[in-house]
Amino acid sequence: QVQLVESGGGLVQAGGSLRLSCAASGRPFSLYAMGWFPQAPGQEREFVAAISGTGGTTYYSDSVNRRFTISRDNAENTVSLQMNNLKLEDTAAYYCAQSALRPASQARESYRYWGQGTQVTVSS
Image 1 (cartoon, rainbow, N blue to C red):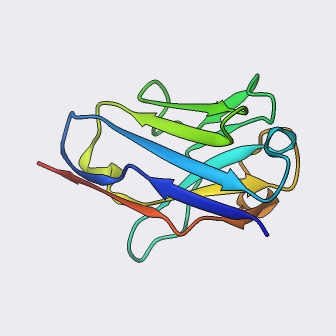
Image 2: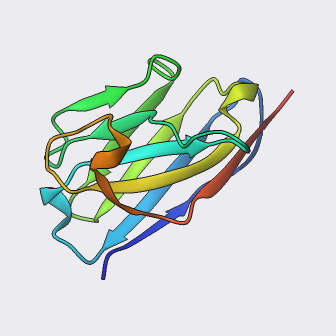
């Protein structure tokens, strides 16, 4: 059974930083791409970052490019999202997701398993 458990969310002032982590279990971790998808109240869950199974390829949405960094540790079965220069509009529940494929993808439908989410709130 696949489990994804996010941690690291919280309240931060605009301009600050947070680091989210996701611990995965249940499948050979390095075989599958991982992604992060925030969802604000009343909005669709949207792509912000993805990383391939080997960690060699990453993708970012335009809204977070150069502010967020996704990384993974295949020895520890974890994926992280370093978020810098946070903005009010980054406020959302952030979901970690594991793809059905090894290559990184921005397409939400390519992700098969989802965590429970961790809340990030950015204040002014």
